[in-house]
Figure 1 (cartoon, rainbow, N blue to C red):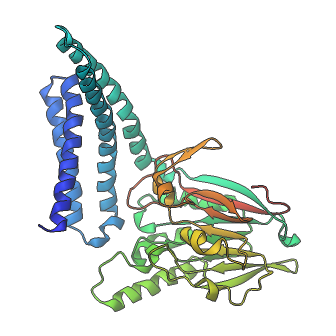
Figure 2 (cartoon, rainbow, N blue to C red):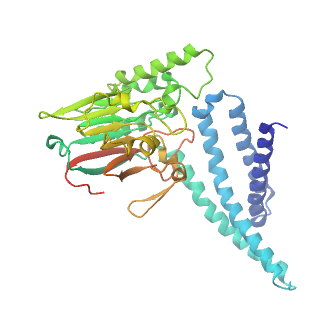
Figure 3 (cartoon, rainbow, N blue to C red):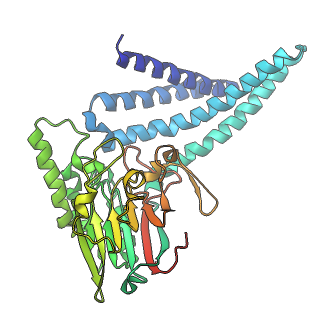
Amino acid sequence: MSRWIITIIIFTVIFLFVELYAFQVIKTLTRNRLIKWAWILVSVAIYANFLYTIFSTPRSAGQTVGFQLAAGLLLTFLIPKLVLLLIMFGEDVFRVIRKLFSIASSGETEMFTSRRAFISKIALGIAAIPFASFLYGIWQGRYNYKVLKYQVFFEDLPEAFDGFTITQISDIHSGSFTNKEKIEYGVALINEQQSDLMLFTGDIVNNMATEMDDWIDVFKRLKAPYGKYSILGNHDYGDYVQWEKPEDKLKNFQAVKDIHPKIGFDLLLDEHRYIEKNGQKLALIGVENWGKGFNQAGDLDKASSQVNKEDFKILMTHDPSHWEYRVKQDDFNYHLTLSGHTHGLQMGIEIPGFFRWSPSQYVYKQWAGLYNEFGRFINVNRGFGYHAFPGRVGIWPEITVIELKKGVNNV
């Protein structure tokens, strides 16, 4: 038996287990056959739609709007059912343990039925929270742009750049967009920050250069007096598509790179630029994608080869694992690194200044926000767009504004 068939069987058993437990809640709370059949039919339709989307589209399906909607519907209904499973399974475990340590009374069946109905109501109420959250995340959350502002202090910052502002955006993923009015609002919000410099840290498309065709006129409106600079992300290389010929992939990759000047960005491919102000300068360094364990195209040494060690340096690198494994302890001293890539997994809980959690943190040590080690900083942008899941739940799309300040580090 092939590994693929075994995997299908395992996941089928898991999903059946989840569905059966969730259905027990409905059976406990109502005898209405119409409601029960509606529950079953909706569940079957969602699974069927998801499977049809997977098997009827190429390997790049994970980046298409159709797949995203199918995956979004599946998660919206599946996550609340997992909540029901956890609560009801926990109640069953408690009941079994209680039976082992007590003698059944004549009224136990009635008492169990009453308790089961009460707990089912509680479980359904709790499950409604992620259900509503996911619906909101798909409907509005993916456009709930947040401007996050930071002041970052450096003792060796050139005086001319004291108060210099940088807007960072990342992970546009234009192939996922469906609402032009909302995207135009987001672009206008970026311009409202009136930053000196604008930096884009990769993933302008999901796979295909043509995904950006309808959005070039929107993103070319972005403005910054000291220039707009960009790098590539892992999705910009076309690695997630089955190409008929190798030259098709190369042609698409060139077309992706050509998008950047069309929207007024200077694409840095293992290169540097100097930003000058009042006779002083800082070095801006941009590398191609470098990820831990995959697509390590970026060459940091090449990008920095004509930069002086004593220069103040800002590094753009798409994947924050590059900073963790290669950059942060480098003797060359990259003062500020800007990354994206994680999206904060587009779901989690953030209470500013108090609590922050996302499954993304189990994969990336630096997964969202500003971090400081060895007196060197990295900001991981949560992304402007979205992909795979067509929404955001608790982890909102981000526009970062960083103000450089001369002085002692305050983080």
